[in-house]
Length: 112
Image (tube, rainbow, N blue to C red; front, top):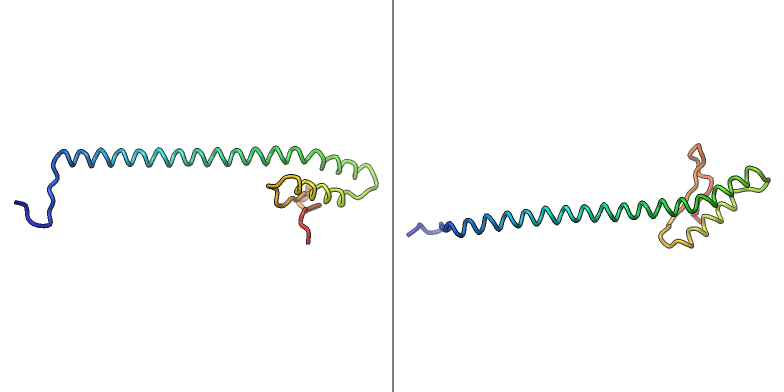
């Protein structure tokens, strides 16, 4: 008889616990890998979506800037209007800003 408080495991129990632990560890590693892959795919999808939206919007902004450079009208009001319209058309857009080459804000969609 073994002393009280000690438990003896048979060889079958030890093998079962060892193999079960290995399987649990492998399942954990695989599921973490899948989660990171899904995260990467979701971020990549949002990045591509943002780039497509920006490319589509930049055409109208470039037209306004070219017209402002060639004409005598102020581009700030028209850019402001484009930004607000763009923000209202696409539900995921919260805020828009347009910078010039000196990194100064020339138009934004923030309204007081």
